[in-house]
Length: 147
Figure 1: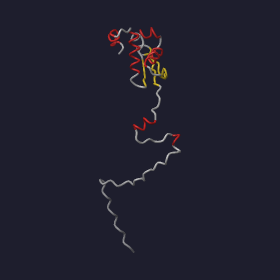
Figure 2: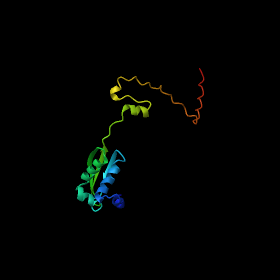
Figure 3: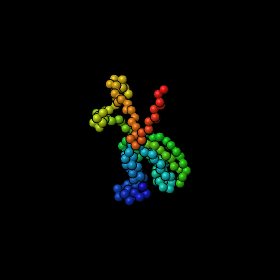
Figure 4: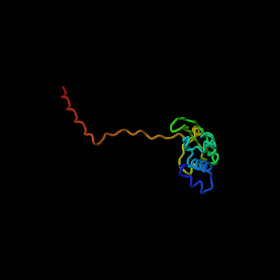
C-alpha cells in the first residue's frame, strides 16, 4: 500500500517517510484493534532508516493517530522475506456511559455489583416435549385374557 501511495505523498508535499507515517496513523484510526506485521528491507527501508525498528515506527504512527494505544508483542518474529514482527495494537477506550447504553438497549442486565440489589429473574416453566406428528403411533398390544 505504501509503494502505490508515493504519488499521493508527493502531491501533498510529504516525504516518503512522512507519507508512510501518516498512512499508518490513518489506518490505525479505522478500528480499535489491529494485528500489524510490517515487511522488512527492501520494502520499508526508508521507515527502518528513520525509525530503526517496526515498534518505533508503530509508536510514532500511534501518537500521530491521536489515540492512546496498548502494544502487545512482538507476538511472533519470523524470517520470511526478511525479518517480520507481529504486533497487537489496541486503543485505550473508555466504556460507554450507562445513559448511552440505555438509549441503545431498552433492557439491560444488572452489573455484577448491582446483581444483589436487582429483582430476581423469573424463569419460564419448562415445556414438555411433544411427539413428532411425522412419527406413527405404535399399535397397542392385545389385552391378556383374564383368568
